[in-house]
Image: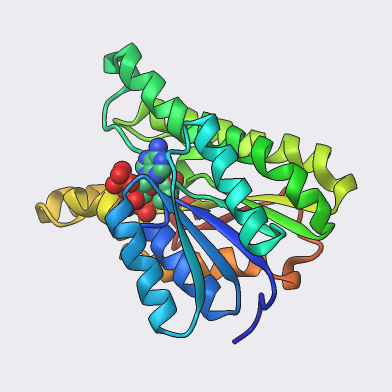
Length: 251
Ligand code: NAP
């Protein structure tokens, strides 16, 4: 308990899946958590659960592709918390198609959420994070930001961009006391993957692929990595790519 007490945290895509799990764990560990999502009903429900459990949280309706939504979100954080110590760029979408069959509209949609959303987040949040002087940006990429796979060309390209965006920002932001790292989950059991993991056994095994632990991860197992990077326990971890994949990429 209390590993991030006193820190103000913003989690994008916090209404469900891993974002919800990150928000709940960060609040349990003492964070003042701003849960943002375009899904207002589900996002408010996450905040209500956090508050009922004794945590501190607020919901902000927020589409990560909108610059004005980002400006509004950061202004709300400034007004309510007066600081921003941790930004978790978690919102993302997956379109299952090889790149050569992906339409320009699908490609743009993927890059708008997965890449431009992260860029806008960093651009909007850094002025307030600089005031903190001890801040952490956590970008959720994927193992598919490191290796290739079938049927997700735009997604994989976007997650690769997030990996190197993280390293470039690590170079630029170190001087301001802002650490920047990426997390690379493997196969995680969330609404994003439900259709793949629970349709039939052959599809499930194909998706799990070479995962050495032979199961998908629970969202909380990734949240533990987020908590570490959000906390001062990771004070010398900067520009790193943290793989949480049950051994998928180990062989
Ligand atoms: P998820 O279950 O689909 O949840 C994603 C959340 O982000 C949803 O609440 C979604 O709202 C929200 N979102 C999507 N587009 C948004 C936008 N433009 N603005 C604001 N919110 C938006 O996904 P997840 O599996 O938890 O994934 C979270 C992150 O981990 C993503 O970046 C994903 O790429 C990454 N990841 C996932 C896996 C996996 O196996 N699940 C593995 C590696 C990496 P809507 O419902 O309205 O779309």
